[in-house]
Length: 302
Image (cartoon, rainbow, N blue to C red; front, side, top):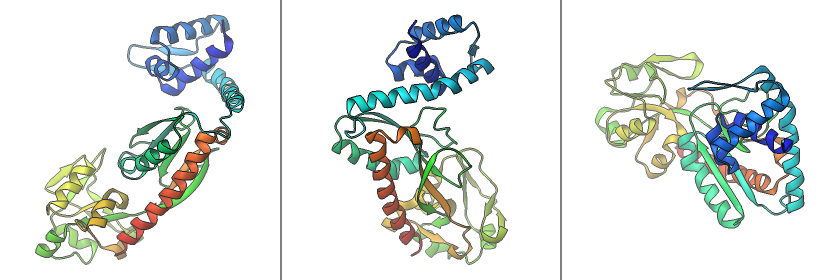
């Protein structure tokens, strides 16, 4: 048995959360991945994974084995990167994650420009609106909105965004601008959240207003489109309406009541920054996102 290959396959199964996805990342068929893991378990004499028809769970033995194997796999990749010249010449695949709309609006243009400069690089971008475990899920870079928990990840703050209330100029002309949060109780509002629409909008100094909307949606994009068409006011994160603020199709109200800014960071793992593909992409993302968020802040403050 090729022990190094077996460790790499097992680690990738843990990162991917399944045999099929691990096989796709490694260029192996799912049966081949299954066979390698089975052979590894036989060699060790312990079960590393608990398999059911619906889920895959790492056993305690598997967790311990992964903790020992993962640094070896990363170190091995670095050795090969050095041999290939990848420390100085960007080449190979980069996996990146970001929130959905932020990724589409602000990250994707950076990736397109990066790929046009470096023809030997491949990028897989995974945009999801949930907390992502970079190391455990096999990502090289992540963009995170919000305050960071303590971790071993390296972080570069690129700016901040705000939670804002907005409406179209047409709606504000017809119905007037709210002057304080309590005015929202009598206004046409659209409640939106990707998970559970909340009935309370929060502002500075602990102010919370219960919102009784006749229009409720689980799609932020839908709520923004409704307000753009003059359907009322909604509360969003400022980056979600960046293009509308620039175009003048939406305006921010109640700015003096906004809560504290929310930081935005580019995250990466120390061991992977030796590869030029990661180091240079982190630098490009940092520079471009800082510029984009400064522009957004100016538009939001108008």
